[in-house]
Image (tube, rainbow, N blue to C red):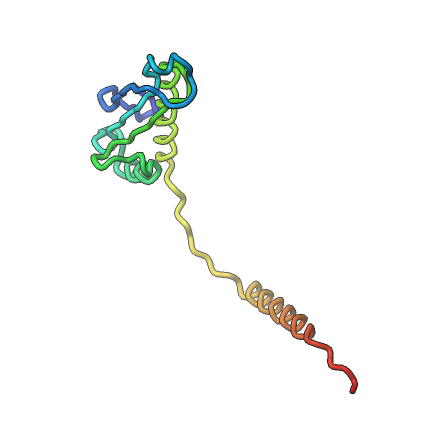
Length: 140
């Protein structure tokens, strides 16, 4: 069981782990030990996550979200299978916690009349300075 927050936990039946051989350095050991972990979380079927959280989680997961509504997280940083399992679970917890935070609603504002006037005055001044930069006519 993974504890996400005070009121949200992920049960063990929602998580599936599979182990494969990791790519990268590791010497002779890497050919024998399956230390890479692929953690699969059935996010769409999870009864513990509210609908809006699932929607935000889908956006955060990106390519890791599968067609059947699961999140795949792969961890192969260390040579220890147990440490890779912990890393994958930590990443999942961080992703779900990020999805729990609802984005603030944006309140559209309009610029004040004084700020509009200042902006246009500045534009006018810059335009007149640039207009004076033309070629200098000689006295023939």
